[in-house]
Amino acid sequence: MLAICAPIVENWRVQGHSDPNRELLDAAALCRQLVPEGSVEAFLADHRHQLFPDELFADLFPSSRGRPSVPADVVASVMVLQALEGLSDRDAARALRDRISWKVACGLALDDEGFDYSVLTYWRTRLRHSAQPQRIFDAVRSVIDATGVLKGKTRRALDSTLLDDAVATQDTVTQLIAAIRRVRRVVPGAGEVAAGAHDYEAPGKPLIAWDDPVAKAALVDALVTDALKLLDAFADTTQDPEAAGALGLLALVSGQDVEQDDDATWRIAQRVAPDRVISVVDPDTRHMHKSRSEYRDGYKAHLAVEPETGLVTSAILTPANASDAKTALDLMATEPRGLEVLADSAYGSGETRAHLRAARHRQLIKPIPLRRAIPGGFNRDDFVIDHLARTATCPAGVTVTISQSSRAPFGLHCRGCSLRSRCTTAKDGMHLTLSRNDQELVGARRQWRDAAVISDYRRWRPMVERSIAWLVANGHRRVRFRGVAKNQLGLSTRVAAINLRRLVNLGLLYDGEWRLRAP
Image (cartoon, rainbow, N blue to C red):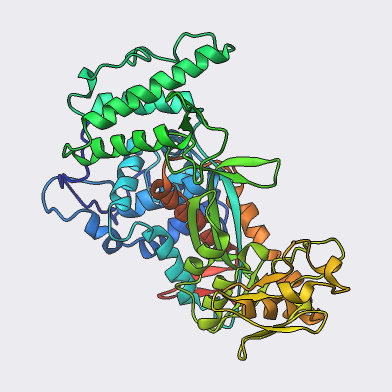
């Protein structure tokens, strides 16, 4: 067991290979008929060697000495089946041990005990530290490309969904105590710095009257004071990466939620810091507001989907507060030029539209609705803008020059204007500010008046929600790991498994090359 959990830098294993010769109790030879045709298990039983060849994982085991690892085709198949069913590592290892369908899929004998669950952790770590961490997704994507199933499919629907984190949200006191404990544990000499707010060796929170605001305020002040002592003591000390990370996290959590009173005492600030860390256990997780009154904690999965087949062509995981519009550019980065992009208004920023247009993509993206400063009054589209001449004309017919800062000042002309009450409530009159990509946004709103555009959007855009439903089924609404990197690998494996299942349902075959069964 200890050998399996050895550091990734130790190349003490060589790549394992599956034995092509069947054993006496080979599960596929004896029980293949029990596994339904058209299932992922049956497909892996027949074609896992072609889907996950040894050379695909050869770089994970560069050493020529050591004990053989579990064969790559077996581990990759288990990871796909695990992702499909939403199993923990322990449950996946048990399924490999006692399920006939899994043994058939992985080419094991009926009496094969499988492997310890920690092997899955070991392989994920190897993959994550490799140059190609999402190679299971890439392997399935290469099959998609080989079949030509996306040939002639010129649409991509974009959407995102919130994923709950795997940790509890922490309040300010809990974060401070946890961050101080970590510094005292990993930074040499930190335990010798005097700390008076709490016995950091004792578990749990300090024993105070939590309903007493005076006692709670005194605790916050003392905790921040202890944190600042540690930061000051090791500010100029060269640290190893773990120690530097612990000090950086302490600096972050000790500053994001507190502020000083006039008497120099520290108290919890009456505000929410931008991009606030909500857990020192998983510093990557974030708050995400679904509405003004409802929010969730965790991550966001962003998908690009071909709407006719339901195949996911790209998947990116970010903290929950990441912008959909900015992530859209990463989703489309590897796509061919000239596609039709369908998305809701969260993707409708001017910058995103400009980049998509530069890549020759046709956009069916719902425009961001305009807000009227006055109910029933005028908005941006009631002004006529000549970007070439740099002029703006208001609803009253007054034309002014647009400044270098993209502002159109109508202030002097608003005096005595009969339309002023519908235009602005500002004392100095109307000052129209144009966005950097104003033309893109105006064009999008104009496009949205076309009934044919709306019809195409309503036909193809909702298809991405089907793929999202597949993604979050079987307990996958909650992530299983901590941090963006680990959960990105989990997301890509899950998407690979769903894509493979979809391909199998579409009639995936291998007869020397990948193709789909003729309809």
